[in-house]
Length: 432
Image 1 (tube, rainbow, N blue to C red):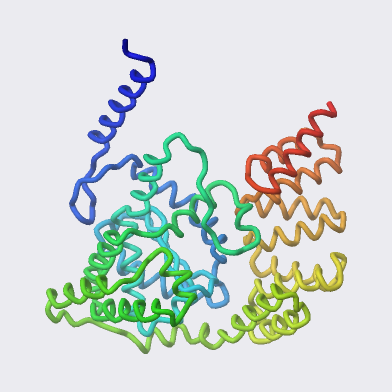
Image 2: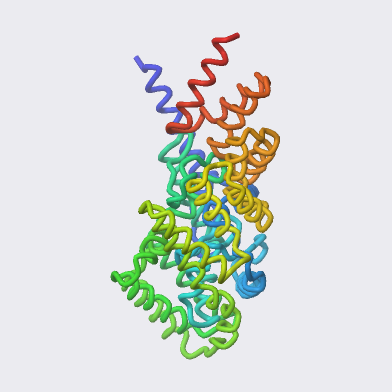
């Protein structure tokens, strides 16, 4: 007798076969057939939905020098125009993150950390980085990674977190968590070789010297040999370098003959001059963070004051100083409130600054301000802590149904925040 379980297995196998047959498409970059369970319209929607939240989980925009992002975007669009998918809605942004890294979300949503830009020497090397990321998008590498996860984890809800050491990282919910999972995932060696190969071809088409791509890979290999842990933690976590990649790039350049092309070192150095000039401010910020973690809050305050002196336009400096004033002088510190206000005024869309100011306002029982900021934070990047405290505000304001809704959102996450939300939710329901 055929059991119900065997019937189900047979039906599932049949469905999988249908998907494998009907879901095969030609990769627009390589020309090879591959499984496609995610349509192009879904790919575009995912990139658009996850781009801003993922930027914010990775440090937010580097806005102190807007011309730098405009410059990177111009170089990126020049390469995108000669790629195998020039019709994708490409976007390029520089992130306020000192860890050398670059990433691409589906449909050409690309970011480069300021920490990587300071390691490059010329525009051609920047073109090599951007060409590589454009290939990841054009060849649907991130989409393929997601499809593999869908097949392996079919029926499972949610993805594990792989974010930075930001204190709010494990509280992030929804699409922002998924986007961060994608950008932090380790690319396969075949995907990296493919991105190097076609990215170099795009460089040549756009008029750049392909030798810059080879030199860039040599630099990455050298730095990965223990000279810079930041590179290992950042770029190399998702883009592992290897001697094989150097050899493959060199072989491609030799095959291309001597195409020539521009390096544009003078242009590049001019465009990153402002960033280079203000690097001591970000170094002082890192020293402040390390001192804060070590418990030396006074030294941390001294270092962040130095950072603000050098670069008074950086919102993250004020957010950190506000936190220090809160710890040193209490939540009612006027200096803390002033710094949180400054951070929000400089970068009102950044969820962490809204979240910090909202939590501070709640401690001071300023419920209207707290609700406004926590809701604004959730509009950018939803977090379990924001939902939990919105539930607390609703309870204080006798808004029982709103409290249930907010606690339910927080309870759907993981960890201590979710456990607290579950207890408060249960207490509300039992008091009916």
